[in-house]
Length: 358
Ligand SMILES: [Zn+2]
Ligand SMILES: [Zn+2]
Image 1 (cartoon, rainbow, N blue to C red):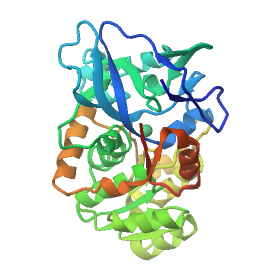
Image 2: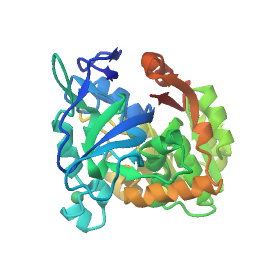
Image 3: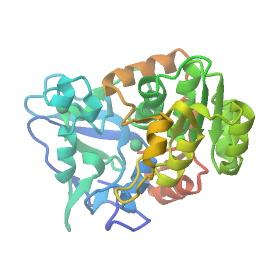
Image 4: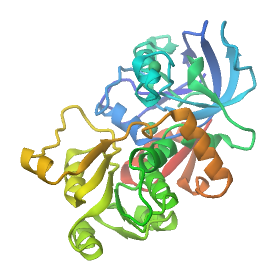
């Protein structure tokens, strides 16, 4: 079958090959025919080595499709069923799951070290244990989450990562208060979803911050009350909050330099929510005096900071009711053969989300 493969970490192009096979099908597993997959910034971060991932690998972790086959012991799924892919399935029995923090379950991460594809040349990994830039994928049954018939594959794919991450940061992690002021630094698909979450929660001011004009324009359509370039953020803080800082600032880039800006843009006693996925050698510096004296709450948010299955259902309910716009998040559509063009659109910031149709 066809799949887009990264041969070595650090390369910036994928090769679309037609000699890839799925591997590891058996008890507890399902085989899925992927129909749509979103391109998430984490895919690029895994390709360039910011996020750890063994190579060669097939990127993609935001996908949806149909069940082709179920392994022994899988009783809740049947062939033909429509599902989205969850890259962080909860095991239900580890300490994190028992505490109700299923988004911190590491059981699924163990899959990332087991190749779920092969080629004549050898084993191929799937990013984060999934790998959706392919026609078919074998994953743990827990990664396959049934979706209602009225949810198209492209919308379901986005709910599988970016939408859940951004909405959850505003709704679960920050629990944005009605009437509050919010700034969102980084307005790709996840940042826009955080903006939609802040709007749903009743924020009075939502300032979108991004260097790319088309993203700033998009942010205004999704509920931002103002959109500024990074150079203009200091002025916006002065003008809108009398210099005090915003009640909530979302860092959706994953770099220490933007996290530091976000910290400084948060008011004393306010909340900095860290959503971006950054590198292990990129250190955020805070001095002990400011940390204590300013009493700013620093809240990291992983995969929406809440139970992912609950977050999926909420996103579907909000989308169905017309309370969030997911269709307009998809600014580009390409076939798998044009995956490298899609990567370039993501790197230059011209795309909010690119849907790869398979
Ligand atoms: Zn993602
Ligand atoms: Zn668990």
